[in-house]
Image 1: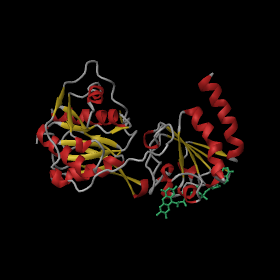
Image 2: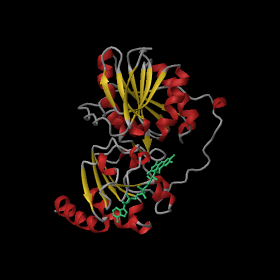
Image 3: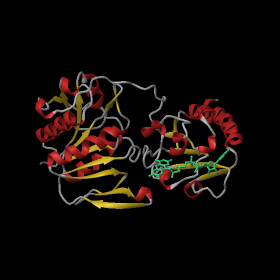
Image 4: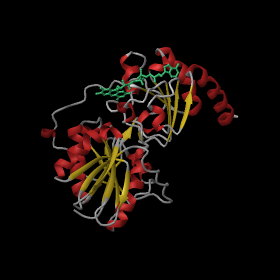
Amino acid sequence: MSNDILVFVELQNGDIRKVTPQLVSAARPLAEARGGKLHALLVGEGIGELARKAATLGVDSVAVVEDPSLADYTAEAYAEAITQASKRLGAGALLFGNTSIGKDTAPRVAQRLGVGMISDVTGTISTGGNPIFKRPVYAGKAVTHVEVLESSFVISVRANSYPSAPAAASPAPIQSLAVAPDPSKIRTKVKEVVVRAAGKVDLTEADIIVSGGMGVKGPEGFEFLRPLAEVLGAALGSSRAAVLAGYIHPSHQVGQTGKTVSPSLYIACGISGAIQHKAGMSTSKCIVAINTDPEAPMFEIADYGIVGDLFEVVPPLIEEFKKLLHG
Ligand SMILES: Cc1cc2nc3c(=O)[nH]c(=O)nc-3n(C[C@H](O)[C@H](O)[C@H](O)COP(=O)(O)OP(=O)(O)OC[C@H]3O[C@@H](n4cnc5c(N)ncnc54)[C@H](O)[C@@H]3O)c2cc1C
């Protein structure tokens, strides 16, 4: 293994996921500390255009693996392709987003490469010598500093934990890698992809989230919050209790058994702030809590707290944001 670093470029809905430039920004100091190059890897089929886009992300080179078996995501095919590509490039360390696909693939790649893995990294403590990364544990109650003891490793990085790397002035060279997963090792095949009409903004990568809990009182309560999300360009999140009550689809759930988010702004409306909910959002940069109960645990971690009825507080907020943001 060399000193080079490889960033896996995850593709979604015909585009590069927003976490990718953040991975580049996490990877660049590691590559510099090791005196290695920074490669971006794209896996799929018919992805030439996206490879050209990836070439402007600020990496030293782009590698592309294209094969019909990679047209739709499957864990085995992708893990095989990434492992082979990584060996071919001689990359010593690999970075993934801690997305659903990253969580599914990264450990498989680490196992195939026989290296250690740190998941859900939220920051870098040091890059010199053995790198040390930050990683929340116990549902976000504590943060561990994990030291990498070998030069080869895999990490998955929580979205919005690093700033996006600036675009490169000139595009990096692109190379095609002739590797393909061994068909005999692929035991699953995607028959059909059913796309659910999702919100305009992806929850896990959203910069702003407006989230509702049991305090919104019903499905119509989420419709009441929607204009606030729209004026802010935010994604709509929810507590698990609101999901279980049937107020909103489970894909909106934030928390220990839902999605982990780290936006710049998280507005919690009528959410008590149970530990399992905080586990998914406590690394948000700015937290605003709106709750009728001044003792609600959400206020313990809120940067701004509004004690009040969300049905009274939200409408003036929408009006003020409209004036401020849209003139
Ligand atoms: C194993 C396990 C995993 C779990 N995973 C998750 C998870 O991933 N995500 C998650 O969210 N939870 C999870 N939970 C559930 C968690 O423990 C809480 O039950 C849940 O988060 C509570 O949701 P809530 O805050 O919406 O509801 P409640 O606790 O009922 O809180 C509602 C809040 O709304 C306030 N309120 C009421 N009316 C208004 C109003 N008009 N205006 C303003 N505020 C108002 C109340 O004061 C209250 O604080 C998990 C639990 C377990 C055991």
